[in-house]
Length: 72
Image 1: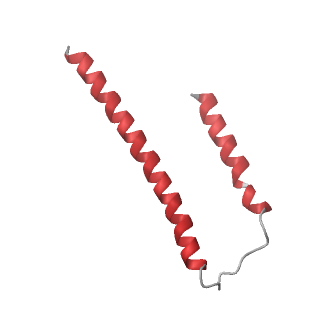
Image 2 (image 1 turned 90 degrees about the vertical axis):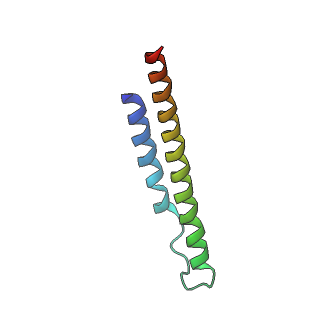
């Protein structure tokens, strides 16, 4: 568990610095800027929601199997 947590923290630290190496800026006044930001952040929210749902479903399934084994 400790190695997994360390790997996750290490991955986040390595990827968090990537925006610092991106281009100097982009035009927020462009007509498509709001749509592109909405689509980008919407996709991030959808990915987090899907991962949360999958984790919840897996945990729920594990709890059901464990309680079924105890009832047998």
